[in-house]
Length: 241
Ligand code: G3P
Ligand code: MG
Image 1: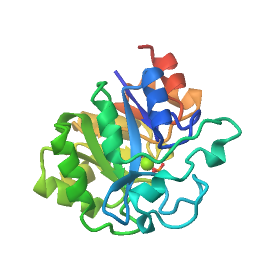
Image 2: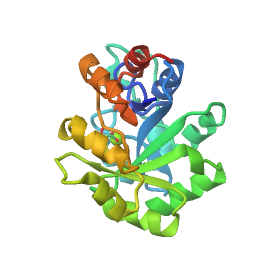
Image 3: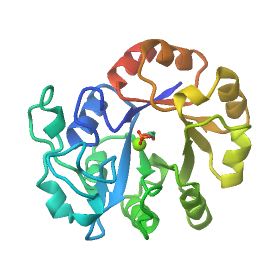
Image 4: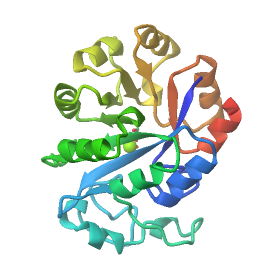
């Protein structure tokens, strides 16, 4: 059965990458969530998509120039006030993990270290995964494939998957070369035949970001390993529980 991963939570209906968005995803019946992480000034792991806080909060500046406590003061629903009035905050990865203790969701952690290098991000994320014993519930993805290989070499028990947005030739071979058990391609860059050929090679395919009903249906029909969507409620309804 196709696994439904809620992109930045239920980002189509709630402020992205907030606890409110993750809680909604669970309520809608998603099997897991996808979230993005950056390092803060004080070495904490913040759950936010962009390198800066400008687009998603009422603040300005780079995430890496804020402490976690300072980030917490920002309103993460600020630009979503037209549909979400309640104040939402930027969570730390620890907070998300604490919440996961009460459910069985999968968590796809996207390391946003393809812009700033965030020295030590991998170690910090892995230490937290191990502290919570979440090794079997986590998939680490990134556009920084060197970072994924670093993880595979040091912590082979942690599942990784490369993110990419262009057409790749034989992506299953590329995944194997990285030591990854899955790929996370941009939805439009993979055809049905590539998805099938990749899955036949034992590599999971989890395209992003699949929002339109007809696209979700198409991937469900070919039994794609997973889909990453802003609308988990829509995807769960189409798939069934
Ligand atoms: O992980 C899938 C997707 O989130 C990758 O792109 O920019 O939405 O983080 P982006
Ligand atoms: Mg992401």
